Image (cartoon, rainbow, N blue to C red):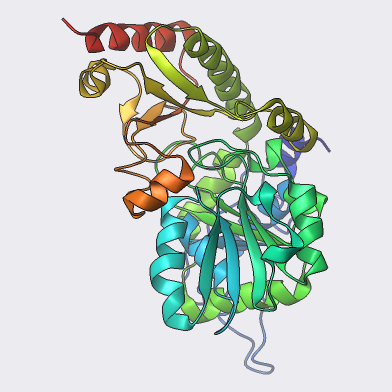
Length: 379
């Protein structure tokens, strides 16, 4: 089945055979007194609705295992919590601020260190030590939209017995499937495109590795950061429109990108492939489209605050991937956990704005941006 069909029909053959699956809210389930057995016992380790969601997520990803968590960071934390004292993780300098916070402030207390690399495509064998246990990848990177050669990094990491964990939030399995390229683990903030309506928190970890799957299953049971049944149900429903939503968002984003590239009020615009022809070819070889996020800076002399205040449609807010457009300032919002030095190394300036494009009418979005630019010009 193609992914749009899978998103709708992945649950067709499950036990209840309902077109819309039921929601199982029970926190506990009756067991067989003779055997103490049963498919479900308590909501934390297992729940029918969450299990249904995980079936859909695994189907879309093409993975053997999927695990739903209460937020994107809970999923990322689970993926990064399998490492032990003395282990090292390599990450890109422009990694998402929440991941940076977890690696910088939480993992050191467990004896695990993170080492940041300006661009993962510059990795060589010399960058790996016996302590290097994983490479964490974002491609496109957030918010610089830099592209990493997944095939090369995967081959290099595996040569040194290191895992490759890919944050695929910006692409989703609709546009990019890192597991098919050889990655070991994929994490996503399902809060973003998978849910798509800015009204729930969720995260997902997918893998084909049975040993890692057991570790993630243990993390759900022992740490309890699981997705609740009602949110699991809502995410199942949202996934049915994911390919359609993303198709419209991506078309809008491409048109806006072209508009900004030629605009006199724009100093720079970044999108997947914008940094070089090599990155453009690379992204095209491992993804099925550019996605719907872009970043830009206003031209010198324009008033950023006046521009943002004048906008009618993109809300000035963190997050991305919803049906509504959102705009944020990474330096003070999504990446505020980074030091100024770390942001500079990552290429995140104080004036960079990140735009997540929604499904609104394109002409309304273009007109709104243009009136915002007009409001920002010196008077």
